[in-house]
Length: 265
Image 1: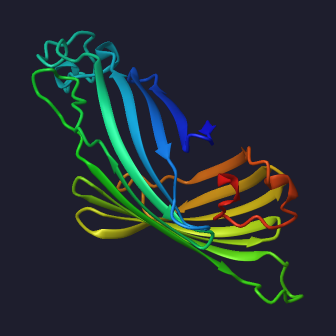
Image 2: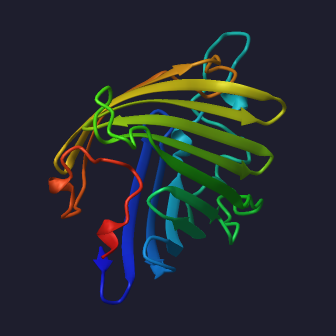
């Protein structure tokens, strides 16, 4: 929601996750405040603050503790005397983040921080577990592939190159993508890598998209390079539809480049 005269926007992000077999339920709601600063006709700086409220719970009755396993008979006892079982409880926490974006219609640079207050998310109230601060650096550049309007390419043809580097605890996460926007059509590839004990490429993704007025339709498939038992890099097939509320999208006529500033005016 944008308040154009006041120069700021508000955003809401709500996520809910549930695993029935373990009784794990996680809920998170974020509220973001984004302020707009204009440096010149085409350069904008967007600082933002995010406040999150989270809750997580586990049903101990759905868990199996070590003392419930009978290795000689193979049976599972219905009750546990593990001292951790009665200690497990719900956890509620407050989360704080901040981000900064500088961009034009050619490039974008961003820096974001999550868990600035290191929220305690431990189910055991006697032993705290604080989330480490997550730092992420983003950058993108959009190349005009047809500046002289060659007949071999659509009039509006772009290459959007994006990269992000995230430090979370001891892990370093890297995401790269290259998207070719050829008028209304797009095709792209992406690469995800991580470094913990060693550096490894986890998966490569391929996407195809079509823009129709204010709608974006797309297909995405991620091909894993690592076994899910070693690294969590599942094979993912995704269909998506996105609606853009910008009043300028309907009149683009094939100029669907990613970095735009006309919706700020």
